[in-house]
Length: 100
Image 1 (tube, rainbow, N blue to C red):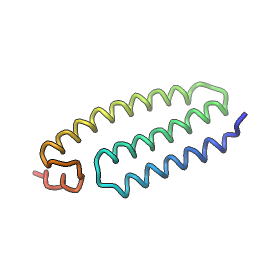
Image 2 (cartoon, one colour; image 1 turned 90 degrees about the vertical axis):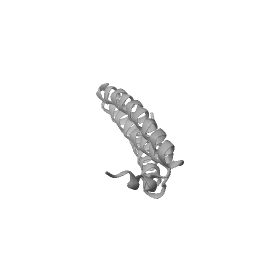
Image 3 (spheres, rainbow, N blue to C red; image 1 turned 180 degrees about the horizontal axis):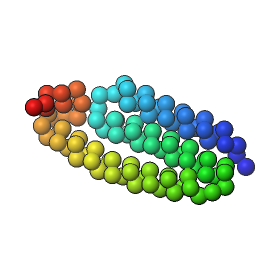
């Protein structure tokens, strides 16, 4: 049996990588990938605690989080396509000119 601390350290590392990617990149696709990493870190925590406590509530919330991530990707890809169509690139700093 693997201790819960290992899962928590893995989750913290994945979440930190996602935060680093979110704060340092200007590419919208890398933004989406970083948000997905952070959601996966939350899923690791949910499943680890579910296993640790012996119930399936965390796994159920993990499934809902995966559904939320799929919806986020669908909306994010559509925003990226509009950004690419209007500015010929996916640099998020160009999107500030889309104001009213």
